[in-house]
Amino acid sequence: MKALEVKPNIYWVGGIDWDIRSFHGYVTQRGTTYNAYLIMDEKVTLIDTVKSYMVPEMLERIRDIIDPSKIDYIISNHVEMDHSGGLPAMKEIASNAEVFTSVQGEKGLKKHYKDELNLHVVKTGDTLELGKHTLHFVQVPMVHWPDSMVSYCPETKLLFSNDAFGQHIASAERFDDQLEWGIIHEEAAKYYANIVTPFGDQVKKALEAVGKLEIEMICPSHGIIWRTGIADIIDEYKKWSNYESDKRAVIVYDSMWGSTKQIAYALYEGLESVGIPVSIRDLKSSHISDIITDVHFSKAVLVGSPTLNRGMLPTMAAFLNYFKGLKFRNRIGYAFGSYGWSGESVEDMEKEMEAAGVELFESGEKIQYRPGEEDLLKFKETGKKMGESL
Ligand code: FEO
Image 1 (cartoon, rainbow, N blue to C red):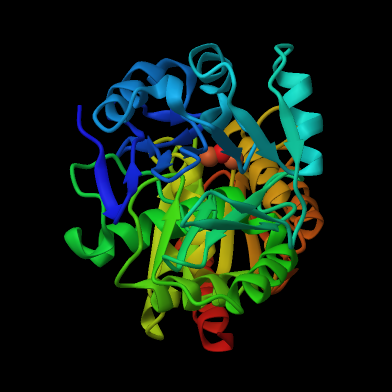
Image 2 (cartoon, rainbow, N blue to C red):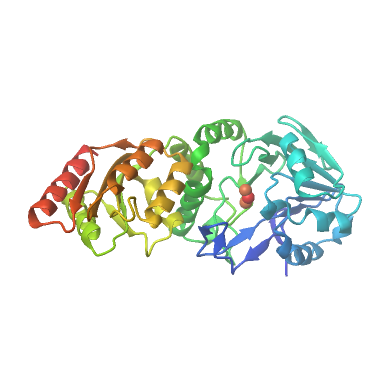
């Protein structure tokens, strides 16, 4: 396996995980990569590693350039094991290598790996001379772990951004101008929506810090390297960190015997009648990590579940629990559902939506057993009103 030179003397030496389909519950239909980078200089430097099972692939790519035992420095921008999993193996191979990480990184790495990793702590503003290259460190706490850090090389104007600006894409292409923007944008948005959303304020601070840098290339730790659409993805991150959304709606529902589904489609018709693009997602067939991408782009979030065992369906409970944890802002919501005799689901969903920070457009509606023609017209009207309010 080959290394790829991304700038003179700087190589991508990561691993391509073609087969992964679940990243701790996030569905990765396109697989992913763990991007490590090798800087060839007086001090041979490895930026991040890969997941432990991808270490042989990373080593093969490093060997394409140099004997891995000759690595002097390893930068650990982030403790999470998809980037630090290769550290113990690298320390065995390059036993004299020094590891540089943030304050929280040191704590995290010591907890994760009992081995002696020869750690050095760096903070924002610290620099490391490699020879012809220098690395400047910028801590970006909570983007998306407390230890998160990015490294910048001013001589090449290259930002090693770790998880920021990443996307879960396994592909033969390494650069953003080699793959369709639509694919990269969708995966970057899904990544942001599912992983970074709770930390909008911290993302703003990180954008401020990196905004001062002259950047010619962003090398994230997942997916495609940005060299053409840098301004585009930074603009998107600015928008996303402000919790901006489009005049769109997503209807998320599950149904037992089709009544809640009928209501979902009546609301859909109402929204559509006033020109609002709508995604309609049955929880039985769509994964919550994909639905969250729709939520990311949608101002309106409508949720529907019948009542089962004095509550909402477990699929909806799981979705709302996940949604609540992501702490979206600036969303409006509406709850609906059918019931047989007790009918708690709508109120329960409303409580969850409010706990998620969603402003309810109006009180939700529940229908006993099956909606009639008049009921459906009423829901269509609600959809229309909600659409007009957008
Ligand atoms: Fe890609 Fe937070 O690890």
